[in-house]
Image 1 (tube, rainbow, N blue to C red):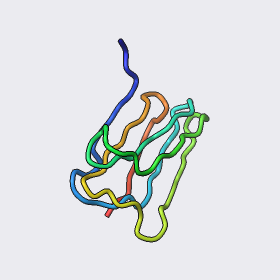
Image 2: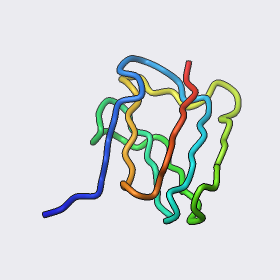
Image 3: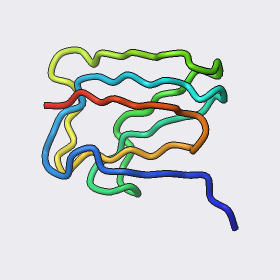
Length: 88
């Protein structure tokens, strides 16, 4: 079968998600930030805007979201044109 899902590591060690910038690919979708692996527990989830080339910027307040065992991202191909993550 064909799978339209993609996954990648943002940082393999302990880190905190502090913010992100996502440019929509024209179709609404979701992006999941997972702990430890691409199949790990979802700690933060966001939705993309269904308008092509629309930017969604988000700053996570306070100390951000803690990923004790590494931060990974999963999303559907075609719903995102570009992603930038801010972590510490």
